[in-house]
Image 1 (tube, one colour):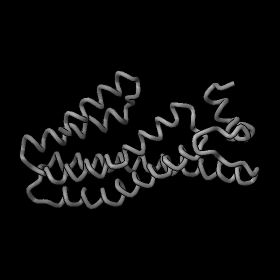
Image 2 (tube, rainbow, N blue to C red):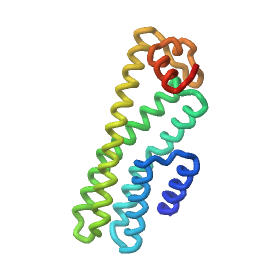
Image 3 (cartoon, helix red, strand yellow):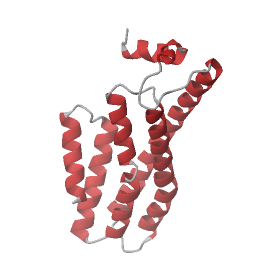
Length: 178
């Protein structure tokens, strides 16, 4: 079932133009790991644990993307969902994931390629954690500017005062918003 999900997700992302190199690599090695686990009857529990901790943050990630796609990027709903997503991602992939990778690599009965794939997925997760720390720094800067200017975000509507802030003006220029 998980293999089918990853294949479907890869095809859907390609269809909608969302499949970049990093995600293609990620999905390819995860599919290979699941496939090898099925072929060699090895590391099934580790793969299931890895899938669970990796995918537990997805509902919040999708909610965040939906909020953004309906034009509510500068709202409390977006910021809180983004923060929760990043916290779940970092906690699960960085901390819990480390133990799963260790268990996968340390087991004497595991297949060597599955062990290598486990390490590869962990390294890629660490790459995304670095990106997320950068996002957190940007959000902190935005929050500081809003606090300084005494501008608050609304939950599910834009506060027109946000459009006067320098970070909003910079992002609007970057995204081509007049």
